[in-house]
Length: 88
Image 1 (cartoon, one colour):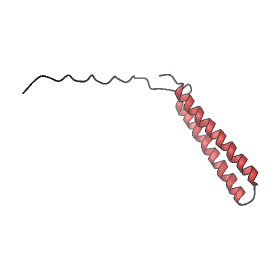
Image 2 (cartoon, helix red, strand yellow; image 1 turned 30 degrees about the vertical axis):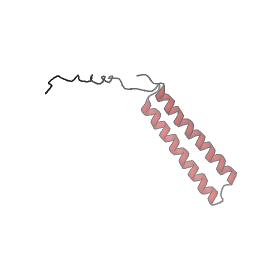
Image 3 (cartoon, one colour; image 1 turned 90 degrees about the vertical axis):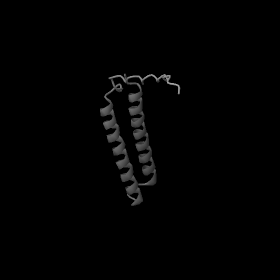
Image 4 (spheres, helix red, strand yellow; image 1 turned 180 degrees about the vertical axis):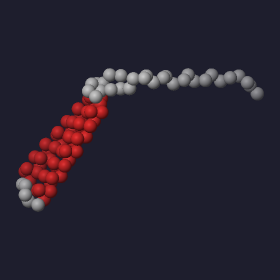
């Protein structure tokens, strides 16, 4: 038998003590994004129900839904950009 020791791989690099943070406080941005997106969903659902029961016209329904999608999407993108440009 050959008792030569096999070289061991180097240990993984130690993680830095600082965790990545956004330009703004990530927890507050996530909370704000969650609130805005939830509000947009509720508004879109309410507009859809009003259109189904013919209390609102179809044009108003699609404008409301489109506005909610744009606002929610913009908020989500802002949250991702805030995280991407954060410091380590």
